[in-house]
Length: 366
Image (cartoon, rainbow, N blue to C red; front, side, top):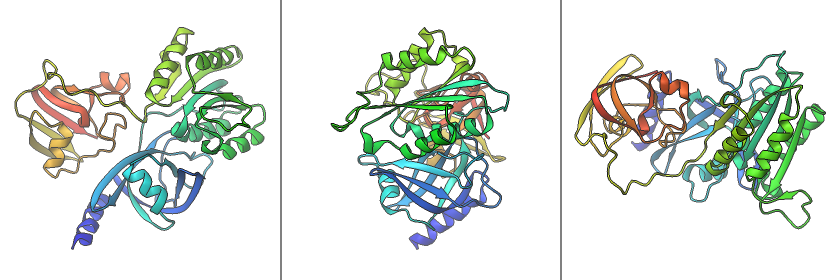
């Protein structure tokens, strides 16, 4: 009976335009704690932009789990889309994928989304600076491959932090790219816990590393600079500050957050946040739903409690899977890191971190 219920839910999701079922084609062990899942191309082919992510949906121990993972592949180069998943201590989904997913397994996913992307043109003459740590390399790899194949005059420099030699994800892939595109890609590794034989730089990537890296890249006056950062929050902030101090404008810096620290909710409620139950109306795939949101719930949580199949993934304001356009009323967002300035100006909100504030709340989820 339980299996039939899960099967029914999966079929209902598949019927929605938001979801698609992919079959695992190959499982590649990248490091001792990271695997890449390559999927067969469905019909029609899965369309995505390098740097976007998939939200995967799995039933683990009788519970639906959702997680977002960046696509590590390039549609311009790789025949099959893939995601790389690093094992996290206590991570329900990451451990399941590393230990139990096998070729032939079918996985329901939400269609690709995300703004950590790049425009490509054969006439672009750019020097791209990639600043990453750990699994932050996953979207960067797809973007890098796409740059090298589409922009013959472009160059890529990668500052890549890892724990040790064995934990460098895509080490051989990056070496092969260096051989395939000589003089066009440089990789600078820095290891925080290297072995005794490591001859490269040691420690974590800090502001001074980013300053030196950025200074060398900006010295290349023949190329226009672009910087892509994908790393833990502290390193990301250090990167943005360092680059800004060197005169790099905001429109030259692109960032992707994987994790964000939880905010302290022990204090008083923010002034202006609703203290009463309020009605919200959302439009999803042409269907309107009206429900109450209590003070202790976000709009997403309240909608899911009503069994409305609202899209979501990380539930921490990073992935934008729950993005909607606020048509009327006002909300308060606890976290908006996943949205660009243009999206916020256009009225987009994240339902997972938003609570009604005032007015008649109407939201269109596209």
